[in-house]
Length: 538
Image 1 (cartoon, rainbow, N blue to C red):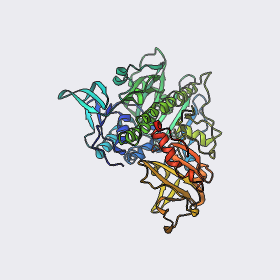
Image 2 (spheres, rainbow, N blue to C red):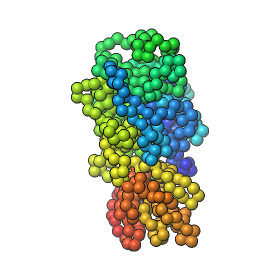
Image 3 (cartoon, rainbow, N blue to C red):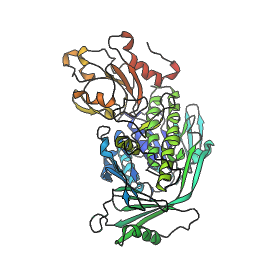
């Protein structure tokens, strides 16, 4: 975690839900002071959002917040799908297929009203006093060096000066409304019904369905989620149908699980939207999470897509506030995340919803014959960002495990060994860009020192360890059996530049014998962080 800066104005976050809290954890991780203004007097008590995907676990690990979340959750390695009318299981998604890709080859179930307190407590331990409850944002004004945010609080109206304002204030975002941004898309005619039930479906009345199970049906699909403290059931509510009572919802569940002793502990009936904001940034104001996109909450792509926003923006703000990057770096946030919400998560979630209801035009968005690609897609590890404006961004649905590394891809979290012990690639770039030189360490290739360019480190990756007398040992990563090299699929003498969010920023040939190549890592880095300088290859 970077040292906190005391010489910059805090970033102001409107909204203390999970995206606001995770964004704040990211800013704190990168040394950026921040303040959350949350209008409610307490954290959410609503029964909603229940599954956290693998990519989100990686983001929480990077922000030093994963351990308490895991302690409060249920971990699962199988996502099941069953045809409800015939009770015939389809092919499950087995997350263990991702063991070479990530340190967390599983997903977790934890309800949002349990997740938020865990995130809040972790944030308060790292940066006490960051969250200010009962502070409702009432307006903001941008100026050259920052933004002035007005609020109402128990002590009356007030203002706070910040460097940037982040709208994490949900689907009815006040910040978005003030920006005048449209939300293009649709609201579904059907609504969703959610019920949390205490019941023993493991011992007294075992059903042995996977702890995250989807039951497709043309009449009434259903989702079953094993939460840490209960079982959660989700059904569609047809357009125009009357809202059922909790007792009626309980009977609906019992018709599925049988006559089992049970107790309703929570229900929620809510509208479903599929909308994306027309504008995510206006100078020093940004939209994130539901304020920027309302994704059909199928396959857990609502909350988890918002976490992708919280993975992308904090490091950019840190680099700009530290003077390591031009403000133009911030434009990459919307350019990369908007296509993921619109064409990635959005299209996949909509296709999954239609498939659950056995609609005639439903697309099969998962190729279950490719178990690895299916797991990558369902866990959001397959996100590829459009880092160079080429339009390549999206979420993979069919790719081979041994395919070569691609620009914009999330790098596999392969293990390597530094002088003092084991690391993973995600650990190495958690708070810095890292230039990886896949080459033969025996030839003592010339690479720059880490102190030459702020925010950038240089490392050699080789199956040959660097002896002490070469001077390269501090920057050498031992890759026994070339496991990392093979996992990434890069040839010898290749430069791979990783961003702090673990995405690949550049892949270039690198010849250690060619003096014009020696500065390629720094040049690639500066093309990203200082685009106005238009540095080209030497």
